Image (cartoon, rainbow, N blue to C red):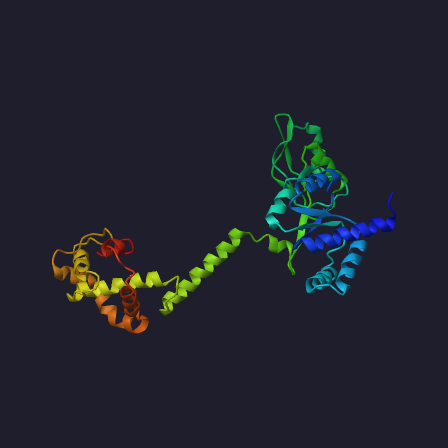
Length: 344
């Protein structure tokens, strides 16, 4: 049988090997986790990572010794400092070493989540609400519910809870009466698992709150930011990658409106046919304008009146001229612009 000192040296070699091999360390809470769950997690982590448990005093010494070694890297020193400052190596915790994405590891942990009853003296990890409804219990149990301030009534010879009642809040200690009530109602309100508290990833510590930010949340904020910047760019008349297509279409609407109102036909890109299509109401499937050119001119008069001011402030025709001169608008422009705006 190996000596205690030999066991410590083996443990030190294992922990140092994990710190060298893996780039991510997940610090996990192990409260109320059964040994069977731990075995299941270890089994499913094979090929993805390693679950390491042990005495916290020994772990601290190994991490400190590694940081003070002459060959220690900046990452080793920062890891030791972070563990000390944030007290990561304290309490009933474990470490999971991995190079996989954190979500892959949490899926494994969630797969070993077990339901458990509320035992006397346990700390509630979540709010517990007793739902309204028939309990199936005899009327003599009414006094028991009254002692817990739970409103009841007798319905068809059994006790019925009138409305939902919160009996425990997160962090509350389960007393004997509450535990008995939940047992009688056959409610097992708690779920226990290896729970990730924080993640060390290449020199950065992510908290539990940081881990709650999913890809969908990031995408939502990113799209909102792009939308806000695009709106500012459009308002200021500054072309950007996001606003340029809209600015070109907007400028072309103004230009074509001026063409219709002033009887001016631009030669580029079949301007004559575009103007005629606008007069005949063929752009955008809108209602056809008046048959006469005077009616069309009257309909487009507001755009023509606003043209000089918009040219001075937003320089949209310059943007349009650049787009047309770049020869990137080949094809049937009537069909192309019909997808973006109606002319009526």
